[in-house]
Image (cartoon, rainbow, N blue to C red; front, side):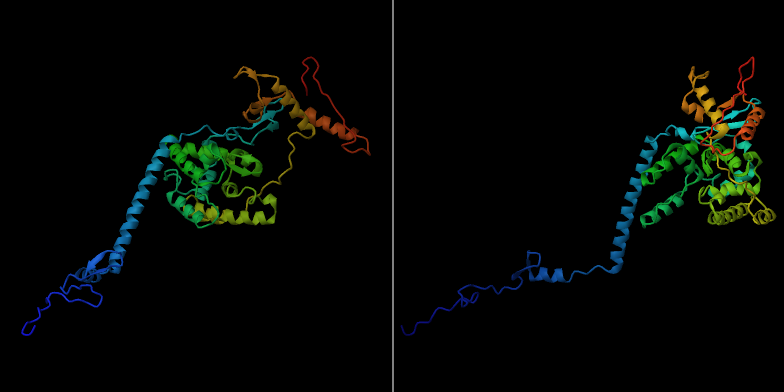
Length: 399
């Protein structure tokens, strides 16, 4: 109809081609963020403009994490150690390392016929050992022995790091730790045994004096040549007693502790050369700690002491062997007054017995020579066996 005006379209909205409506109001348009949340334009701008952490902030954060983790681990370690210390008791000593050689003597009670032993050992007090020997062993094996707590924390950590790096398991043992390992533990090489060794060492350190630990160590440690303890070693290497060892002899025994078989000069030129090197180290250690003078070190370092040729021994062979076998059989039939029961094999071989027989060394030597003189020619030892009996009339004592 003419003259009529068309109603205006509302200004607030506009119809699109799809028929949908679009809002033109600012600040209300939204989008989906990367995390799936719906954000407005203003929120997106705030999120994008958030300041990034600097390297210093990352460093502080990392140091804090490492510190807290370290403290937690340290607390766990201390707690575990305290628990183990309270729960692990000192066990009974290994029987073999309490054994002492039993000696058999001729009729005079002084001349030795032979011995029985699980381990060749004669226990003596620290006062019956040369000062040179005690000084040499401490200087070579554990210089801080008289002042340490029985363990070497730095050495243990150093060995643990070396072992964790793939190297062979190392000892890092003080004299106290070595003594504990010998007397109470096995020779197993494991971290569990090392922890137990350290704990027992601390306990032994509290219960025994340094002198008692050193005496026990020097009476149990293996020196080589079948000798356990200083007294047996002094006899095996030099034909003397632990009390009479001089400086050079003491340095040799302190040296062979490191590797009894590998440092025994009786085992060849290479072993002798290794002994010379270790011997020089021991003499140098004695000088460094002030136990000997420069002049003593120079004189002792010139050469090794003389060592008698090692004789091949047969405990139960030959004339003496037969007599010792007879003694052992006789003991097994006798009553031990201390126990009221017959002597056991352990008591005979490791009880430190002193057995005086009726045997005469003079008569036995004469019998042995008489057999050699009367033996017909052309017969070997396996083809001809000769026996001699020497009995004292009236008493029936075997001579």
